[in-house]
Length: 308
Ligand code: FAQ
Image (cartoon, rainbow, N blue to C red; front, side, top):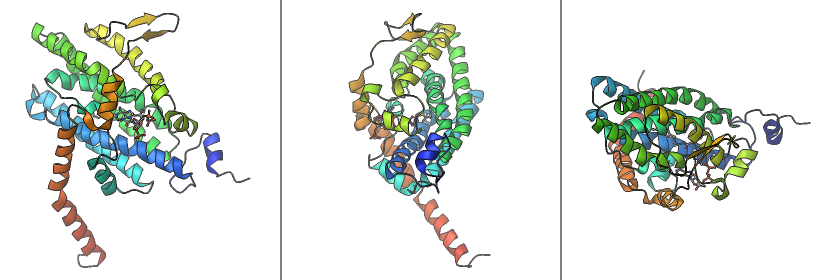
């Protein structure tokens, strides 16, 4: 028996590597997910990057610079993993710029105050960790390995966000109000990071069967709610959901409905800041054109022995 067929490797819980045979639909599905994830990392640099010059202290500024720089690195690992499936980064970026490939809806909301930066770390990165830790057991090897390092860095991002929230929540009344206002605006976008409800998720069943995803969107969303509510209580902040209540029988929090019309509009290109984020991305890409051309010319000269 051929022990290296795709089905055997999946059944034995082994990883699929770039040289292994794989069904075209598997290749396309993993590439779709990794490309979206990579794009999220680099678009995610924008809302926080806007706050680097306005961070409230040198200490917070140094942390924020490191965080945004980490996100660029995450994007690069992920583009590398996606390239191993046969599409180069240039083409993925073209597809991002033309709206053919997506990025996470959470980055299409405005960051109005410093508390939004703190909440993005605490809840945004907190949700990202819950989503991504299981992906370190994804059946596609290069993606799983990229996740191992990314999750360690996301963990630092989540803690710095919680720490910044702790300071605001224990600060002046104005700071506490700013923290609560940010929680009010970011709770739903954070829950939507897990994707649509399972009943409206066309990709989940097949991705689970192939081991690309290890849990459904709703399972991970529930896990995040269960983790986040006690953290909000410890901060003395209120989660903006009147239906939120502990269900002892289920051993989970019950929560209210989310505005899925808003989510789908955002997914389909009509988020509050979609146009601004994409325009900034395209402008950055054009500004970097001379660097890519210079690097290509240098490589060409090396290949032709013109430079030794
Ligand atoms: N935003 O059938 P499903 C970060 C699309 S973390 C936009 O459920 P799937 C770190 C989906 O692509 C954020 N689109 O899809 C950070 C599909 O469309 P398609 C990124 C969404 O793949 C933190 C359609 O809806 N994390 O950046 C979203 O099984 C803080 C149907 O959905 C990842 O990408 C959404 N929220 O499950 C950086 C993690 N949800 O492609 C800076 C990896 C769904 O069929 C600061 N990705 N869609 O046309 C995943 O785990 C999965 O792809 C899901 C979606 C769970 C996002």
